[in-house]
Image (cartoon, one colour):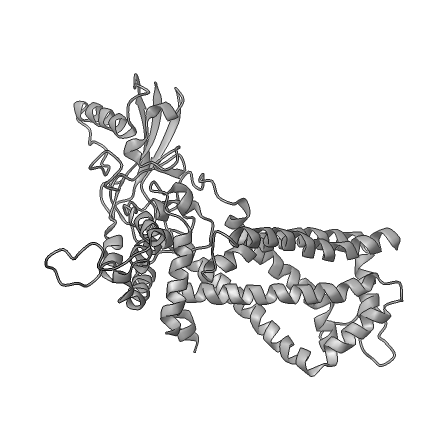
Length: 224
Length: 246
């Protein structure tokens, strides 16, 4: 299984990379929708209900497995592709990359790596608490479930964490900005008529989604 | 013009190469880049030194032989040209020019600035042709081809296989070259018969030879002397998906 996975052609690997990336981008919209519930002045009632639904609904639970698999394969494929890319030029240029290219496109593996570090921190702060692997820094709810509303508040009221979160959202924006258009190119969906629209949507998405996530720590920092 | 040249010198494929610095004075700004290297070589020969080996042939931007990675760009600091079309007026007097061979695992250095681009021939051998019986030329209108497709096919066929796309790509990917060769046939009825096998075999050979993966930076398109479009890469991806699922 592993061998056949590695033996996929370069284009097949990239197609999977693109499809998984687009799937993860859909997930980000759902995640942002739930996170924005944190901003409602109801002491976390909406957020708890949304979190409870996501934690108990069977369809969501199936998607959770697909989502984890999606993340893992997206990361593994990215690493495999990048290793091949590095090996393809064993002797480097003394002066390189003076060609005019989209700036962010050259740093996908690095922005991806930073996002991976953020994911690990994020999991330690939330998902691993749910699994019981990490102790919650705030008291649990009455039913014994972790209180992610208070947990998020506790984190976002710390300036260092909030600023780090916002910086990492900027990195996510850089990653997404190139990723969306590149995914369509990889899938062969390129046309003079609609490619400019894809590029426009990519720019809008890459700004709005990370901006939406960044509003939350800013809100807690300012109003805490 | 007075110039300082830092040129990669490597006696043969397995030898360890290094940059050697040369001073070159009184070069005309109207001199072509290759003529400038000719002048350098005349001086080197006059001093009983080994001349710099570099590829060239037609010297009119058609053959794709001249290569050279000049100050961080394939074919030097101008757009849509080959090195033989580059002139010294593109550099300032007193400039330092770093000249390197194409760098890619499938393009080993043969000597100095000459690389072996046989890898491209091997990709073409996998399907960059159509299988037809030779004989009398068929009537020009016996197979109808739309003007749009004919133009796109001709645009793709303009690729001269120089390897600038590979040299420019941070991943040493050959996707623009392979996609141009796939597209020029995929767009025409005569090429559709073997389209599925062609794209699968050419991509497989591209991978086997050790070229990198496309990460859609489009440096290839920016540096292509024949302005081959990135849309060919998208077309090849479409062709590949169709070939895999059919």
